[in-house]
Each structure stands twice: as C-alpha cells, then as structure tokens.
Length: 357
Ligand SMILES: [Zn+2]
Figure 1 (cartoon, rainbow, N blue to C red):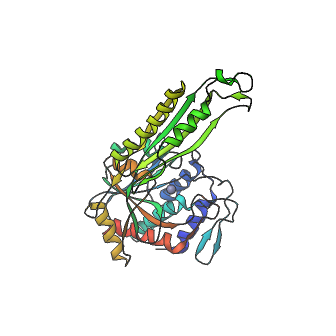
Figure 2: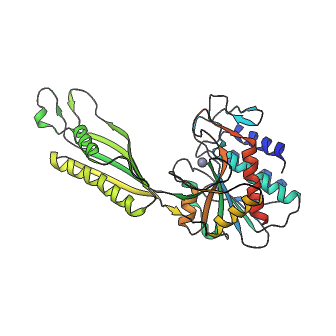
Figure 3: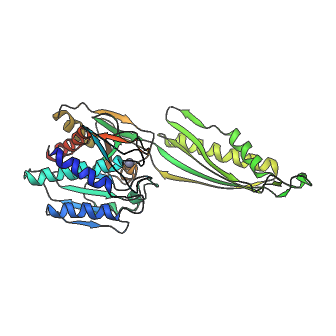
C-alpha cells in the first residue's frame, strides 16, 4: 500500500467538482487511472463506470459513488498531519471519493505487486445522493459477481454496515377552496389547516427501534387575505421491517384522507417505495469474507445497522449481497467534513485482503 499515492489520488478526486448528474469528469479520471494499469472500463447508459479484472475464485464487486452533495464547486482540501478537511467553504467530498480512492489504490497494489486475486468488478455509480439513481439504472444482469463490498460508510475502522431500512417517500397535495379571508371566509376551505390537522394526527419522529417518519417540506398559500386552496407536503418513512413501514405509510395516508374528508377538501397522495431494506447476518458469505479480511489485518469487524439507504440497498434487492465498509468519513454533507488518511488506507487494505484471501 502506497499511502502517499492514496493521499494524492484522494486530493485529486476531491478537487474535481462532481455534484449529482455532473460526474463525467470523475468518471474520466477513473477511466484514465484504470487504463494506465491496463484495465479497460466502460460507461453504462446512466454514466456509471464499470470495469472487470480477471482472476480466479468467486467474483467480487467493489463499489463507490462518484457524486457528492453541494457545495462542491471549488473544494480546497487542507491537510494537517494525517487529517484531510475542507477549508470550511465547501464539503470535502470524502463521501464518497474516499471510497473511490480506496478502490483505485487497492487495484493499483494488485496490479503492481502481481498478486493473484479473485475476479473483480468495479462499479462507480452516479447520482447516489439524489435517490440512488445510478445504482437503480445499473443492469446487474451484466455483472457476474453476486457479492459486493461498498465503500460508502463512516464510523471507526472495522465498521461494516449489514442492515439498512426501506424507505417510502410521500408527496401530498391538499386541495381546498379559495375565498376572500376577510369578506367571505366561510366560502373557503383552508388547505393549510387541513394539512396541519393531518400532520398533527399522524405519528412522526421515532416510531420504534427500527421505524422513523418525517414531514420535511410544506409549501402553500399566496397571501394572508386569501383562504389558501392548495398546499403541498413532502415527507418520508423508513423502517428496517417492511411490514412496519407499510403500516406507518398507511397511517400517514389515512391522516391526510381523514382530515380532507372532514373538511370537504381533497388530497392527491403519492407514496412510493424508494428502496428496500436489507439485513445480512454473520453467516452471510460476504460478511464472513469482509470479517476475515479485517481480522487478517488486526481490525475487529463491527457489524452495524444504519438508518440511511445506499447503493447497497439496490444491489441487495437485485440479488447481489452487499455491505458497506467504513472509510472513516466524518461530518459528511457539512462544510466541517474531514477524514483521516489512515482510515482510507485501512479501507483500501480491507479491499486488498478481500480480493486476495
Ligand atoms: Zn455516500
């Protein structure tokens, strides 16, 4: 492992701006780095980068996403000893360029040291941050491996995310009736009030150990002297148990429908499954492989659940058993984002061990 090269790769990657939908320059960087190693890569129709490296044994996917959240147009990384941070005016982009860098370093080591390894498929996705769209567009029938190691998690070294929730998104538009608020309020149906009653009536926040719900956006009304006829609401619910998620989404739906019916309003509701839960236990071959790889490096694996979705949700739903391994990213999606080089290097070593064990 060449930690200086890894640092250089990471710094080069974070300096390339890549908000969701504008990943092409990062894709080109990855393609060029792989080409230098004699590894061909291709872009799928969605813009995901896919590369295959021959080997023997059971095939394995390494995956990370190329896009970052904003602000990311002029990332100026600051390195103080072992810690890489943004300068406080942007995110750093360690989510998920630390994962990209770790994969590239692991592959460089395999090629450079001519190590014998299992067949590898590298998958670098687009638009993860805006709804896992790159992973959703992936044609997984073209992938040979049925196991994947993702590098898109935080936490101390050894963290392996083996469980993640399902998520439903909710969009509601309440239609009331406009009227002059001073002259004839009785002729109106106040859509904001109907929405407020619905929201107040539904369970929100932490529902139980594995279920959460939130109303995050409300938008409506045009003037204080008009009874508002429209209000739009967006929210979500998550659970690691699909039955509980369905029950929660049904309660949210019922709250809107009952509040609307009680006031003579109507509601257009759209509740959609964004991604499905997964839960891998210790006996799953991918969990065993990653755990063995970590122990071979003196790192104790910590199998953890998460409250967020990732590309691993999509892969697991497609029949590819996928976990997320921590790269040590911290304070992601904030301008205080930082990461320790030692943690990215540890993730790269885990990949190397997974490939060669
Ligand atoms: Zn991420």
